[in-house]
Image (tube, rainbow, N blue to C red):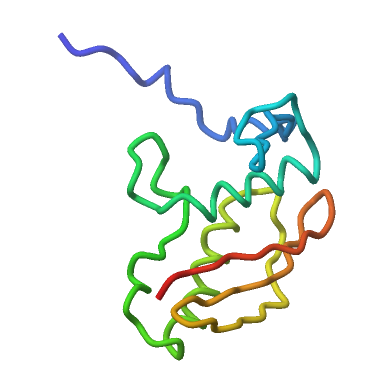
Amino acid sequence: MTPNTENNILINNVETVTEQPNKTYYLDKEKNIISGFCDNLEAIKQTIYCILNTERFDHLIYSWNYGIETKHLIGENSAFVVPELERVIKEALLQDTRIVDINNFSFETIKNKIVATFSVMTTAGTLEMERVVNI
């Protein structure tokens, strides 16, 4: 006997998505401890830091949409890395609905590292961020 599922399907009944508060634990990177809470722009800044320092697909605890892909940049020349780094940063950060746009990229090559600085426009304000990638 198969169950009757005709009555269980809801058509055109889409629930509205409500924005959840972005209050989270504060990660004190200098002291290497969790200390209190943060919210709004500081919470978004902390999220950006975590996304940009988590390699995508390496950790089963995160979905495949979380993190950044930088492993393929190792060993490549800077002419390839600069536009690719801009692309992967945008791709990684725009997964968060609080992030509206990423722009004003600038790149500096120091030995075998590329330092990317950029602006992140969020729903709570604008942040200046930096990501260093070994090549």
